[in-house]
Image (cartoon, rainbow, N blue to C red; front, side, top):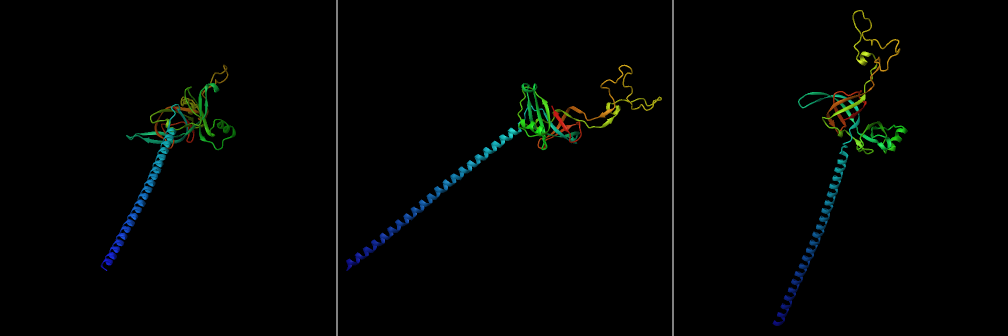
Length: 286
């Protein structure tokens, strides 16, 4: 009986040890599975983070390349043609400019450009070198004007003017000419059409002194006086200064100083007066 009891105890102990071993093995297997799952999750997270980092780096590289290209394009747009020494503009009006020490200067405001090269002439085809530039797009251009600009791959422009150039000067069709060709302190010449003043006498038109106002002279104070010989040549010489229509002529004022350049608004501030009334076309050269 004692031997049977001992055998039963031994069997129960063996069963308990087997169950403990199986439990330990199962726990170890679960731990291994959890470790593998954690490792796989970490690997996936690392790959995902690597991909996001790669995407971020690619996007940043693309942004940098776009910024570089934009900067390069801006640089190309801001390049100044050293051969461009002329521009067309519109007279806005006059104002006052004050210096740092408080001095006041009268200034004419001119909206200059942007102008576009609409035609290039050379010795071979035209017998001389010149560049034609246009100013202000013309939405109501007639057919001859439209065809002229279309031939040169340009949009029709309202005003155009030709400037003589040297043989080595380089321009391209459609090239933009802006106020950035000027700088503060430069001296320019401005050409415009002077204000029309109607019919005027010789004193106002030519600066005559007039006749005597005393010693029996009557109604000669503002007269021109003698205008020519009698029998020979029996006519008035051409070019004689006479009363007539005054103003409305092409006038050029030279050596006008630029005291301010507003590139954003295409404005030039030129010291002194400029020929013509407000909103008139002017030509600026230096």
